[in-house]
Amino acid sequence: MTTTLQDTATAASARGLTRTYGAGEGAVHALRGIDLDVPAGRFTAIMGPSGSGKSTLMHCLAGLDAATSGSVTVAGRDLAGLDDTALTLFRREHVGFVFQAFNLLPMLTAGQNIVLPLELSGRALDRERYDQIVGVLGLADRLGHLPSQLSGGQQQRVAIARALVTQPAIVFADEPTGNLDSEASAEVLDHLRRSVRELGMTVVMVTHELGAAAYADDVVVIHDGAVTAHLTEPGQDELVAALRGRRA
Image (cartoon, rainbow, N blue to C red; front, side):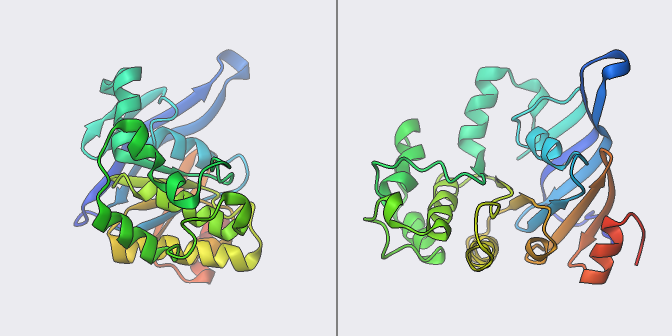
């Protein structure tokens, strides 16, 4: 079922978004005039073939890459109106990130890694929120462990908790299960979905895996730098058809 999301609160949006690298005959048009609304309080997956522009789209929505033209709005702020310093501060306060690499500091415990963003920004810890995140992600009995004492799935859950503890308006996850086996991947995806259901988070995940997209509420399909489908709770046949560039 395709949706216009007209009646849903929006966490991030793009209008006429283009991203071009290089110039002249060698220019690469990674994004071509994308219009997109990311609904708040839902789990959205961005899918597409290799080189389709899905990671570039996420990077522009997250303020990690600048649009060539068009606009990106996150949490009600137009990112084009922010200079580098203001954009860095905005990301720190309103955006969370989860990547393939866990990026945990090896000398800190799981609990210390989780609260590190708050310490770096001088923000106070909301203990109730912290306990809720730790509970939802199943980390209560792992907080005193070093990363080397945790499985890959547990390390990624610590990375997710670190992204959530600052209470961001939106969390971007770039192939978060890329370094995990199937069992750990399912565990991490289930916890991402629980963070949406139980913590009210908004999560946008880039993935190339059908199985991962099945955990999402909404799936955005991109081909050759353009959104070709925006599906709400699609069945597998509908999703496969959209990835092939046709309707089920």
